[in-house]
Image (cartoon, rainbow, N blue to C red; front, side, top):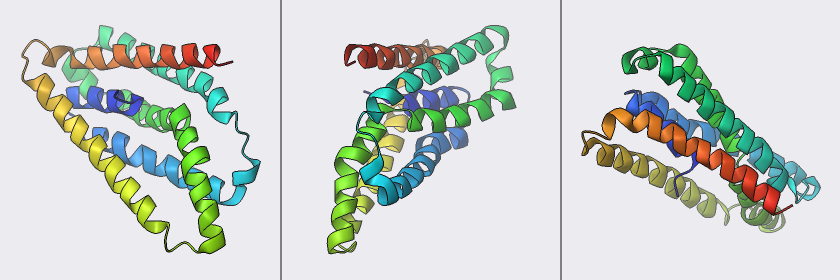
Amino acid sequence: MPSPLHMIALAQVALKRWAVALFVLVGAPLIVDGALLLVTFFFYERVPQRIAHDVAYAGGIVLIGFATFSLLQSRHKSQQEMAQSSALTSTSVSVAILAELAAPGTWVYWLTLAGPIIAEGKKSGYGHIVPFFAGSLLGYYGAAVLSLLLMAWGAGLHKKLRPRLFLIANVLLLVLGISYLFRAYLSH
């Protein structure tokens, strides 16, 4: 299932902002993962295990708020006006960083997979864990960019879908935000 970053990036592709879309998919996660790498490295034992659950509420609110903002913006502007909107661009980049930070999956990854591997590296040396992280980065970002290209290509094949791509991406982002809240509430 595409992530919120995919939906934000896809909306940027619909506005013909490929550079912003690629920053959303690669830059935002690198910023967040870099920060979480430091948090995990120095404070892994102190990070509460419930953080992924608690963060899901914030993530849902961020996604719903941004999707609502984008949908409201699209009602009052043409596709060309939205493509030239610096407010929509800067908001997209900011929300991409917040969405990645507030995604439960990000925290689950750092607490259950990366954290123990970093702890192992502290004990037995970092040389043997570097390939894991290098492979993870290459695989994650490569798959993210490839999937964005495929989604944009697929949407481009359908003449009626292409003009509605911005709307579809933001409606799906709204659904993802609601699902974050719903899943967090059910797992309470």
